Each structure stands twice: as structure tokens, then as C-alpha cells.
Length: 127
Length: 179
Image (cartoon, rainbow over all chains, first blue to last red; front, top):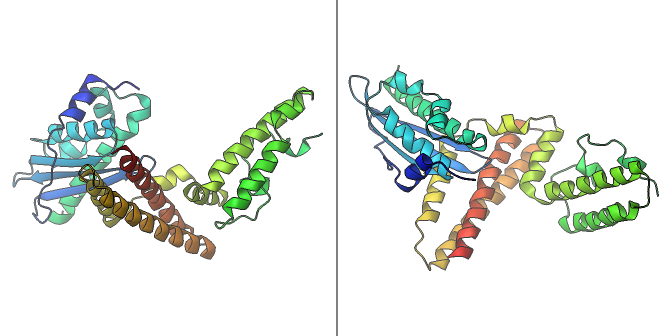
């Protein structure tokens, strides 16, 4: 299966790989996985007092499409409000990366991850 | 030779019935292998080359079912999944259940550990291989117990855990052998 240039670019030069301090009240962590392929994804956001995401980090163990989906997502969410970030759809990711149908579930995983991170942030804030 | 018992066509089969072994998680893999080879010979399409169209078609279908059944039953993870299917569970829906953060975190750490093994450190692979096997076996134990008790939610979670651990073990072996 051929990966698109954008997938290869994110796979070879993943953006924002790393970890944020989970004990920080402004940090939300989303951990999700895809059992069928054994992929595991951690996506974290750091939200400032204005409710804007000022940093995002990820770590993904999985195929190129899963890495590219989460890498792209961390780029997209920076500067967005948590509401905007939570409303990103997997179809937008799949379209941007030209994912083939068999890899759509990788973009679904990324959407689940950002939703989980936003939920974790909101839980921490008591919202 | 007639093959009337294969007449139900493409309907999903109960593989335990096919191999004439009791439905359950514990089975003798060696015995399964013997039954597999016997059935395979019995329904080998070559034996029906002179038969009617129906006989040939049924034999081909039986052959495919026998092969598929052996694949499913000989592997503990897919056998566990098949047992859940027999209980009426939709495996795709089960896969989507939310797992504990603790389990996913552990999976992440194990994969991190695997990726950070420097070249030539075969001891580290052996250790990780043993650790992942132990985790796998403990989930097998949970599945066996939960299934026997009829606690299918717990069995379903154990099965999803097994999927991750099976992949992890495969990945450990793959890297160990390609270093």
C-alpha cells in the first residue's frame, strides 16, 4: 500500500512528539488504542487561562498512518479553543492525509484521542 | 462418498462441532491437530474430483471451513474471541470498549521499552519476551475464569487485552529476530 507524501512527511518528521506534565491542571491527557492493530496513542494538550490550547504533544506506537494522524492533529489543535479542538472530525484528518479506506480507522483513533484529552482536561477543571 | 453434513453451505459454523470437541476454552492443541489432518484428508477436494458439482462445491467449502476453524481454535486469542461470538457478542463492538487508562499506559510503556532496546542486547529482548508472555498468560487466566463463571463482560475485556498483548509479543519476536 502506498502512503501519501503527507503521511510520509509526518512519519519521517513527526511534529510535537513528547510528553507534557500530567500533574499540571491545565494539561489534558487522552490515551486510546486500537486492539485489532495493537496501536496505542497518547495525546496531550496544554490549555491556558483563556481556554486556548497553547501546546500539544503526542506519542504513538502504531503504523505510519496512525503516527501521521496524531502528528497532524497536534499541529491543528495548537491555537484552537478546547471546543474547536474537540469538534475536529476524523474525516478532515483522513482527507488532509489522503488516507486509503483501510487506514481510516487511524484517523478515528486520533479523533478519539483529542476528545479523550479534552474530556480529561475538563474533568480536571471540574467543568 | 456423500458429504451431506457440509450441506449447510456458507452459514457460519461452530468450529467446535466441526472438530467434534466440547465447546470451551481449554483444548488439547495436539489432539486438535490430529483431528484437523483427519478432516482435511476426508474432505480434500481431490477426493471429489469425480463427484457431482454439488459434492465438489460442498467439499471445497468444508475444506475452507476446516482450515479456518483450525486457525481460529489453535490460537488462544482467536479461540477466546470465537467463544464470545458463540455467546452472541459482536467482536467489533467489543473491540471499541473503553479500556482502563492503566492498561493502555502499561501497553505504551512496554512498547516504549521495546523500541529503546539498543542493538545487540538480546538479554533485554528475552526479558521483555518473558514479561509480555507472563502478562498474556495472566489475561488468559482471567478469560478462562470469567468465561467459566459466565461473566462475559469481564471475559470480553480480557479478550481485548489479549489482542494487545498478542500484538506486543509478535512485535517483540519480530524485533528480536531482525536485530
